[in-house]
Amino acid sequence: MTKRKIEEIFKPKFWLNLSKSESKKHKPFLSPTVWDTMSKDYDDLEESEFYKRLKADVLSEIEKRGAIESNFSVIDVCCGTGSYTVEFAKRVKEVLAIDISQGMLEQLKKKLEKLSLKNVEVICEDWYKFNTDRSFDTVFVSMTPVLGDLEQIDRFLSISKRYLVIVHWAGLRKNELLEEISQKFFKKPYKASSPGIVLIFNYLFSKGWAPDLKFYHGYFERKSRVERVWERFKTRLMAKGYRISAKKEKAVLNFLEDKSKDGIIEYKTKVRIGALFLNKEVFCGKSGNDRSGDDL
Image (cartoon, rainbow, N blue to C red; front, side):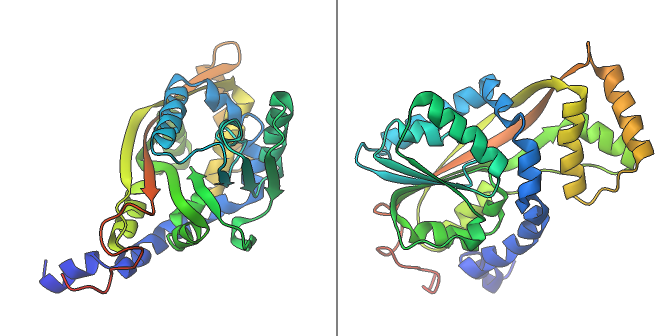
């Protein structure tokens, strides 16, 4: 590799260009319809032991870094059903929770009502169309396809007074059952992995920031009725451009029925998740400035 090419790696433009192909892959998953479908049993994930440990540790790391204080304001971008939103609401002054899916937000509202939490403002809006002149002590973003677009990282930083916390995929997301269906019935491999959090870290580092990065390895475990498992899988496959005829759908359902026990299927996804913690007052490079133009 030439010196010029090596130097390019240390410039934000290199990572922005690299992320464009990743952003295109995730674009179909920005539809509210996808997430409305997923919202029906999205919170089943909260019963997974690995997810419980992941969330508990992420919250512990956030608290340890001082990114949650009783007088803080937090924005939870693409909050989903609010798994983290409700935890923030218990600990800070106010939370703004925004998501594109009304279905997801309905689940969040139920949680807020059940827990009698009154300090959360819930907004149903596309993040790309959302405008605000407010800033927040902590900006939190978790497991959303929006993170495939590195230009949004700059938006997150612009509304953060001090902290940015991101939880995202980290190159491994392997569901053997979904992969088997893809190969058996559609004759092609199903690929769900992406650089994810690593791409974000490299982009931030190239801009002079020095975030902490922590990885988690484990399995997301789920248990659902055959019809529901297929509905989830079908949504993902169609978002990736798969064409599913009625005949093929019936064949897949028969296949899943054979694998089920009393109509229930237990399946798991092997994952690696990364959590990134950035304190804007602690970084490598110039104070708050982009160092991308500096000489090596």
